[in-house]
Length: 536
Ligand code: GLN
Image 1 (spheres, protein in one colour):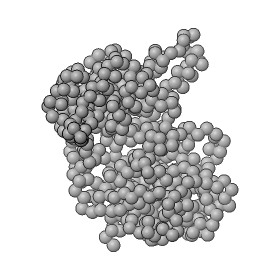
Image 2 (image 1 turned 120 degrees about the horizontal axis):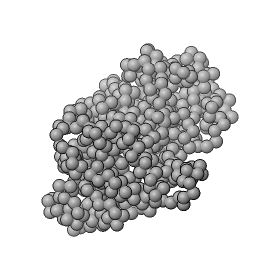
Image 3 (image 1 turned 45 degrees about the vertical axis):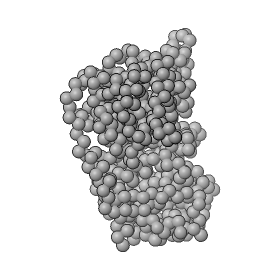
């Protein structure tokens, strides 16, 4: 196609309806027809990026290959489309304002009064159009975070209004709403949807397609009613029924005709057949497991599943690959102690120790690792999880009782994990870590190599501290192998333990790059090892 089409996805009635999943599903449907698609998330909060946000706020911080700390929805986009996203795919109010204020300070506005309209909205519009201009995409899908009616999202909705006007039939708006079911009345209610469309209309935006989240099927009468009240065609009322896995959503959207409706509204000939073989194969494997494993996810944000979103999704991909149902037990590292250790962990076929920052829960993580090491339970340690494995080994095998990371104890006698020199003078917290993709060279004689089947891999990072190379030989002599290193700077990226079926700690984050099409090799290897353990 020789033009880029812009699809805006807004949300009404309530938050958490799954705009990210709908956007990713639509992208998948268009991609399956052979179109080039990218997805962007606009977040109305004032943080420049989510890097400094506590996971309790908006869930995990997702990291792109170019080192951007972004919203977790970008993870869904990548997992569904198997295409990398970049900094340009996530824009926050904070980023827009800091750019406009920088321009104002430089004098770029030549004495004008700088205002929300047009300066802020122009900056938003530029960020949207930039993706289309740069990427040679047939479709740019832009998801507007928040719910229509929020004060914060007003400039974004205004930018959508202007773009829709400028672009004519090159742009359309998909509005996601909720049709609640009132059990007492035994009825589905359309009024909240009508009201949220009215709110959009007040802002000058007529949605073209309504995607309606619902717990019960929408019959034709309800569809007609919604259509009539909201100025859309009945075929543009798309049902999005609750389903047991998010990976069903593209198929459900296809059955409802979301993609054909989008093409029709944009006047694009519907002449490409969608190819869904790979996705359907994945679903078939996911739904027909022959084995089952119990994995403990040891972390400190276990009350909120979104904090470990990418890890949980990686397990789903790796489970399907292994035809294995993966039951995840979230275990708070703060609750683990010497007395309950055995009871908490004895039923597990694999232990994953999660990434994290700061001291809280660290000793529980170290105890869980000791248990995995001594009882030969398959273990995967990610980032802080790997660092804890290094600390555990120092304390319990190398006999360095006080060993620690200088993040946890700046005065430890044995700083086996230490801050990198170039990080020492940094005082700002935002965007100042070792971030994004770095190469890692694997040694052939390792479980890591067996999983990847490659000598050089690129993996995403997000941390300040590193394995302290001063101690490297002591570790190797005592049976902890260094099986992956950064070829340029000789930093330790992967550690493993001899005489253990599968004990792998990685300084990087494999979970950010696991997708439906390419489940991450380390998660696949880890689940395979857990599966082997169940057979013993
Ligand atoms: N807190 C550790 C560091 O900064 C680990 C970070 C992480 O697990 N992402 O190095």
